[in-house]
Length: 325
Image (cartoon, rainbow, N blue to C red; front, side, top):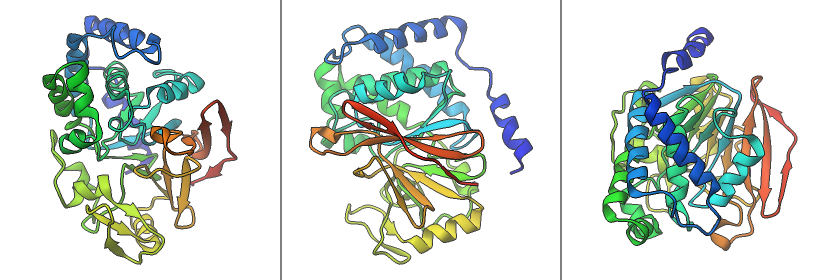
């Protein structure tokens, strides 16, 4: 795809499908969510508010492609897992949409205590500012995992099972991957042995439930592994692991410089693989209160210079940059 065509993409979707009254309602919901105390469980946001947010976000998500093509500057966040205060911290440090652009790599819910607030705020921001925040699907945006890892129970306890189903209907519409400036390939999990053309992703129709195997499953579940050459079994029992040779081959075949993904908790919040051909970003510090990991956000400027903002409980620092192009 030429650079000229890339720059035309935001213009094609510049007009939001959300009308004036709906925008006003979204602004009110976003304002209330931002103002919630850390221990508040969405008391100022009603079921009807959340249902309206999901309905509007669903329209916006389906109006954009399954494989997003995005221009920098943009900030990338990995797994959040219901750690709402940490999500707000990134926004407060760097600005909210539309002042700052974001791409999130999935896993907004489960494990953490505040998945409802986290997902509702992100969907409201998406509906309100469709070309300034982009939400990819993670493997935990899945009904079956929600039953085991907390989101289903949180919805049932604080609201209703019906509301959980509304969320599920919404994240069945999430895109699966993104390309930044025809240079950085982004997804939640990883690569697939069945991925030969990017058009395969572009042609995937949504709404979509996550299958147990195949391309969609791999994009959300696969993991890089230093011990693997080619493709190997995944200890998760789903999808594959892939080696450095697979990363190099993918980058060469499609002309990319970097793969950016989430899906794994890494100690410093980010971790390189395959001679900086792939990076894992994990944005939930002190994950579940059980790990002493940092969280990180990758900032990509207009010249594709990448820097990392590292978040630990009570502190924040920025790393030296590297260039992908």
